[in-house]
Amino acid sequence: MKITLFKKRFSILLISAVVVNLSGCSLPMNTSVDENPFEARIGSWINNSEESQKKVDAGLTAYLPLQDPFMSMATRLYLINEAKHHLDLQYYIWEDDAIGQHLLSELLKAADRGVKIRLLIDDQNGTKLDETLIQLAQHPNFQIKLFNPYKYRNFRVIDYIFRFNHINHRMHNKLIVADGTVAVTGGRNISSEYFDASHDFQFADMDIFFGGETVHDANTSFLQYWNDDLSYSIKDLVQPKVKINSDDPLIIIRKKYAESTDFQKIDSESRIIQAQDQIKENLKNRPVKWAKAHFIADSPDKARRTVEEHELLFNQIMNIMGRPKNHMELVSAYFVPTQAGEDYLVGLAQQDIKVRVLTNSFLANDVPLVHAFYQKYRKPLLENGVQLYEFKPYIERDRRTWYEVMTGNVIPAKGKNTSRLHAKYFDIDGMVFIGSFNFDPRSAHLNTEVGLVVESDALQNEISDSLDQYLPQMAYQLKLNEKNEIIWLDHKKDGSIKEYTVDPETTKFQRFIMYTVSYLPIEWMM
Image (cartoon, rainbow, N blue to C red; front, side, top):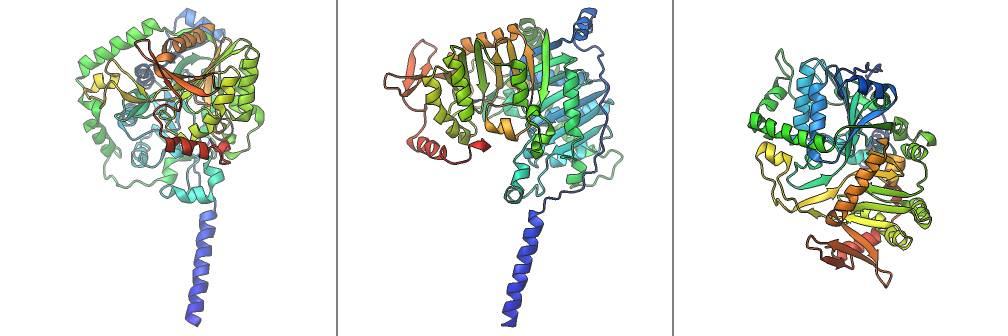
């Protein structure tokens, strides 16, 4: 009896101790120290001519939209390879795949030639890269931090149970800055599917290169995150699995990069010539232009729920861009307008303002839960004149991707690759936003975001013309029929139109689940 009672008491004590331990919010001590901003180095960036300098002095920003995945990758590599002093990088996802490892290998080369590198990755990324990152962090020129780390990084379900309010706020930012002077931001994370290099599916996305005085605000934003208490050095969170008895602590990672991956197998001379020719062709068709621009970002305080309303990126966007008077075009991979967003868009359409929205179809959406909450807003938007398009899950491709050309690899199912929309941009009356912000509650209130607003009729017209040209090929057009029911129009290359009366290629069970889930009280998390 006494033994039984003792066991019960001991069990209660043990369980209580475990609960107290798990529910604690403490992380390892953050040993990071605040750093000062790097000095901007103009150098030879953006054709450092007298004319270009005058435009910089006038407060203008050089910009180049990067819709093509090859150009987006080439631009990042250009920034990494041409940087002379320092590189700052900030990403939500950095995968341990061919693209992720290739960019890390190029960053290591930059560090070897004396470039100071600061890499900040959100801890939602996972642990697959931990061993690589902790090895790279041994380099004197390579600093790596994780933002808002999980306390139980290898058993994350525990954080979801006991620390949900902490870890539900993620750093969704995507930014690279070279020498404090030129930068790239947009929707792309560092992973194969964002650069037409995945064997499973490809994301359609949009980035933008920019340079000039606007980059000063990007530098300031990055430093805010880098010095924030939520940014932990990888050395505080991860211990190397292998101890190196060598003068070079990076000997393992150097060997890995020397022997590895697809890009080491390239017939370098011929492939580089091909790449250079493609870059020249793209730049000829789309040269760098100049305009007034604004880099905007959420404060890292948003991740701890202490941000002021005026600091929220969405409010900054609306303050700069204002209310549309003629038209608004919105491209958002994850589109959950909420009732407030529906009222806003309907109000515009009822004032004869053209409103056009492109988002993912159900099969193209990599987060089906988001689609469940989006779909209930379709009919009221259509009834009030908002134009809706949904990205098709398959896009026919008539040529090899840059990745296939460079590596000699062949992506399976070529010509009918699974495709998904990931871009986030919209334009209002001569102003264009390109960044990481989705039109959904998560981007608005939970995750931190960044982006660039460009005041340019030319850029807006370029985007509008592109949508006019490609929407029929890459997206279903949604309409209401005579019965006031939603139909999906699939415009074929031969001019014919196939009509669907339900979400294309979905099953009854999928549609039932979408309908049921849409009534759960979790829209605020989408």
